Length: 443
Image (tube, rainbow, N blue to C red):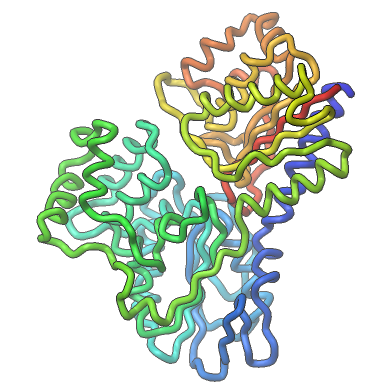
């Protein structure tokens, strides 16, 4: 089997995973209209009891999710507004779309978040509010607490991304600097009935972490936020307004985020409609159809992307050399979301950096191909979803005068793979369930 066949197989496996988490199909698997009854998972809602239906939400998959809701409810929708990342669009009839910045929030997101909060606050007991949440929702709903500006939140987000903080840690701090996050949207919606449909982009599908949990109780405290800053030694790098607000929270001078047991959660349903694990299961089915012995390692990998690449390649080498734990041809699958520690000034993302680190570990070992890509079609601040590498990647680079280790050390994986024409570009996929890593091992 040649590299081109492996590459086309890897793309087919990746796309099969994407199809499993297409937002429209995912919502329609869980939501059905039967006469005047809206069935959402195991719950039933009599639409005749509501005078108004409002749709709100945020995330990279928001437009596709909204389209599915429009197709289900049609003219029963009275109003709606969702925020999506620039370019992640669909043609909607009833629900308005605002495009905004991600991963760093911008003024468009601030304006939309304010209007979404107003829609939520205006809902009464005769209103059904449907909230659509997907990956990126946290950055796309930036409504800071009093005393903290959008610029303060932008600066804080940049510091957290640069230091390698996990998505859980980033969201813990975002929630405590937001009016909407950490259960704030559920508090605003009360006493209306709230249904939240969620496309999960976090490890373990933790509801309080997905888009910073706008409709669920917050499990973290101000003290946890301070501990995160201390862990990474970034307390003096975040804006003074942020430090002051977190300090006021620790002293009890400003209220905590909503916690479990508060009354406004009694009329709230949160339902995950698709996740990384769903994508990996379908990817495995496709890999097996293509003739590979397949091992799904986990959907919950996190941590430094370079370390994970080394670990994955150790397993791939074991299979290639010893036929253990799988006989060839074999396929390793994994998911989750890693982090990159910025130490250079280059351009790239966690998937491209994973592939570059993997390439250095398989140089000269024929028959292995790696594809790692973000299911949203965007890897870091680039137009690529990820990248490919095989046993010849390092040799091809050196022949072209490229030093792979220099590019890796400069966090410049994007330009490395661009020079080799090995970037994987999909454009916006309108879904987001973290990353998929596909490693194919030939005989």
